[in-house]
Image (tube, rainbow, N blue to C red; front, side, top):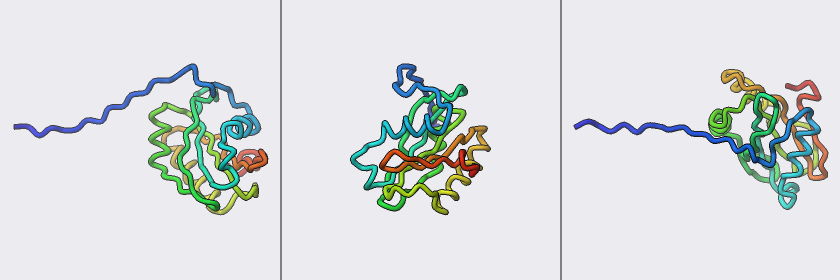
Length: 149
């Protein structure tokens, strides 16, 4: 009697009718889109980390929330991030998280996770176009605009 082997099946179906199907041309485009879709009831209370998934034309395929944390931080699991990126066949990503305090300067932890994600993404030929920090008032900080990518 043969042992059964569990196979992993991967499937993906792109929904062209996505309301996000917008081309991102700048950090401002990305911040406005994300701020518009951020839960305004929690932006001042709880830090969240999301990834914008992009196709080869920098059109948004979707937005995935990777984690929700506390007032001062949230944890990112790179395995989950890249499972989502690879399953959606995304060629570029934009990282984004909020600072409930409204402070728009990146912390050392923000800088470290950005470098870690960028290094891992390069192994999969996925471009990290930016990492944005947004504030409850709609302001934002762009790693790319500040030459930190």
